[in-house]
Amino acid sequence: MAKDLFYSLDLNLLRTFLVLSQELNMRKASQRLFVSQPAISQALQKLRNHFGDELFVKVPKGLTATPFAEQLATSITPLLDGLASELNKSDLFDPKEINYPIKIAVSPIVLTCLSGSLFHRIKEQAPNCTLELIGWNHATMEDIQRDQVLIGIGYEQDAMLNVYEQKVAVLTGKIIVRKDHPIKTNPVSPQDMVGYEIASIITPGWNDNFSVAAEIMKRAGFEAKIGFRSEFALAAVSVAQHTDMYIPHSNLFPIEQFPALKMLDVIVNDSYMDTPLFCYYHSKYRRNPLVTWIAEQIAAVLNEQTSR
Image (tube, rainbow, N blue to C red):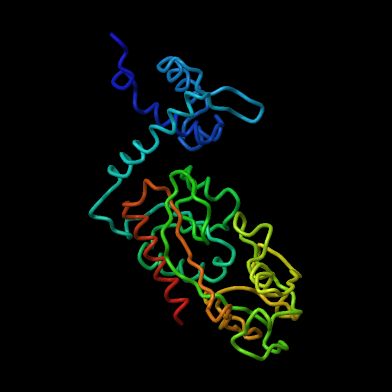
């Protein structure tokens, strides 16, 4: 009779297998599972004996998965995520009971405008939690996959396995310039911006190698030049305050905090420029009350900031 691979397996080992398949590193896996590296090695040996496969092979920078391990991870991840979601569901969710860190990654163009308001709103309802706001970077989507970041907030990204996107706002494009900038018209069109350089805010993984504003100018038939680029929104603000450069931004920008600047409407082809903003989180949390609550707080703060 063939061996029953399910009922003869300690299911705790599957957690180790999944984390190893995600991290491909014994040390990182041990840190995530809060066990020693020898314990990880012992669990891996049991898994190898159980499945009759090496599963993970050492390489210079860690581990690489065998074809069998890759296929197994792909097959069982949705099943275990669904089980985790069901076990973590609670009809009695109360934000006041949150007494652990919540890590949220925020794109640079949003971080400066959202961080304080979001912190105050969440702390009002969950006073015992620790809110960790970090900048969006190239690894954020993978960190969401690995449960190292709970939620990310940013513009639309390429789809990734097990990462769910939820639209939380639609931002309207604006241009930020200094108060005494030579441009006096409002709204402005691409033609009005000819001759002025762009101070571009970089969102890693989204516009690393291009400027959306420059692309819009080129499509309209006008030359565009990027004079400054930075992942730090306040650096672009400082440049705009002291030059004729302009910052492509949105109605999320807290213009009232910068009296030396003014915000201009943008019209392209007789229309305002609208861009959706998304929350990203692991698909296993789609019905999780904590994640649902956080997404609601983010959407509420965004609505307050953009409708002021």
